[in-house]
Image 1 (cartoon, one colour):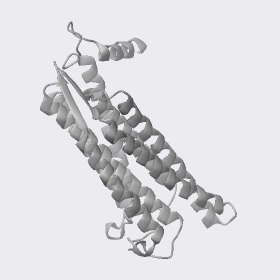
Image 2 (cartoon, rainbow, N blue to C red; image 1 turned 180 degrees about the vertical axis):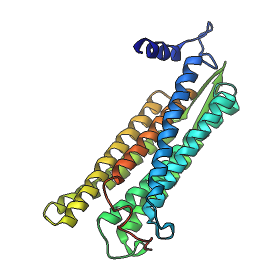
Image 3 (tube, rainbow, N blue to C red; image 1 turned 90 degrees about the vertical axis):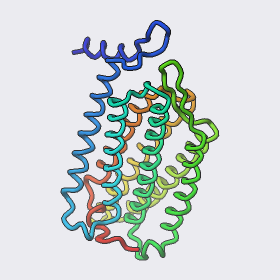
Image 4 (cartoon, rainbow, N blue to C red; image 1 turned 90 degrees about the horizontal axis):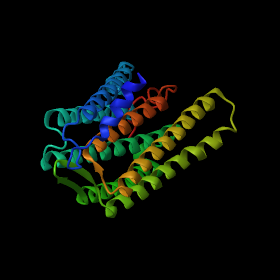
Length: 285
């Protein structure tokens, strides 16, 4: 078994006589197919598990819709990368190379927006605010004060993207002009939202009721999950910026791994609490 995986990993870095990677490396293709099957299978299980708990779709809380949307968006991306890889080959032409970049960028940005909004909803839920969302100054600031500027950062990344195709090799990425604001804003937003959970968590330890105990667990899990997504996101973006882009096949594989990690973190956050299913019986705007 060990020898099998050693051969499979070493074939990922095989090069042709002219020094460039093979366009359709068999070992690379096999590893990518295995990864897609694992990621897609787990995402489908998570989506089915979450949807099976929904008994009244008409009164489903907003945070539940966000989780389902994140899972569905991730599944669409995984299927898209599979079609792009198997149907066309990411190193087959410049147009396919550019499409791979747009697919990675679009999926990453949309997933990030939904995850941010999910964390904003969790802040609103754990604080048990008596006012509606549109009357809560904190909720409005968290939603529009951070998400709207993030749209500008997203636009920068689409504008400063690049897809280089030369002698059968695809390399994609974003320029520093867009990567630095993205990393900085990602850290700022995550640290801010995480601090809200941390402050609320400290205040809960002064109470000993069952209700506060449940809320502590919800807050603690969300706090840890937020830290995990921040670490994963910053590490991924920093590698892309420092290396000045990535080969197309590496980008697709990293995006699949990052998506699976984020989905598993979300599942862990919501698996042991009732905040997602009972705290807000209907969207209270």
